[in-house]
Length: 175
Image (cartoon, rainbow, N blue to C red; front, side, top):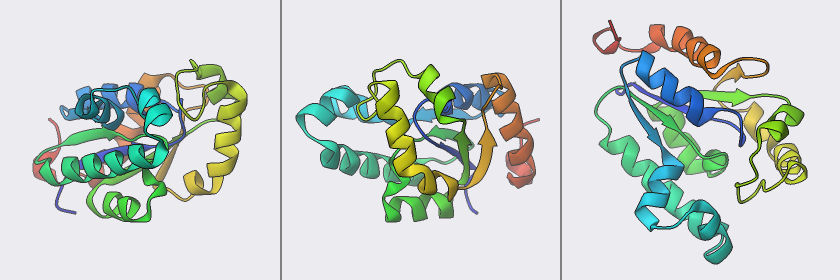
């Protein structure tokens, strides 16, 4: 692997952004939230894009921006992916080839409790649980798994940090 990019995947509310920010500080790495980049690039919220332009348009933007980030990133970086970012086979192959992938997970009931309702495909607990059921095999097939159940974001970030340190190239390990 030529780059030291850590990507965090998983269902909505699994803690990708929160743990990712903490992890980036402990690794002295940049932090990128793909959903935030998409919103900045489009000038619209994710919810607006889904309701006005549709999921297909959103996924195309997500795929393009994620590829740009991967190929333009030069140093140690932590990237929080959207919950469905790796549903696209080519995007998944890119992430698996160019990054160190971790998948965060928790029980559907826990994820539903964490849900604040502002997610386009998971606006309420029932929608989120249904989405998780639909994508369960997908999430189970991704990267190194990190259980976020009954763990603080700091604990999750530390678990990832311990797993990722030996995988980083020696010259790119934080002191």
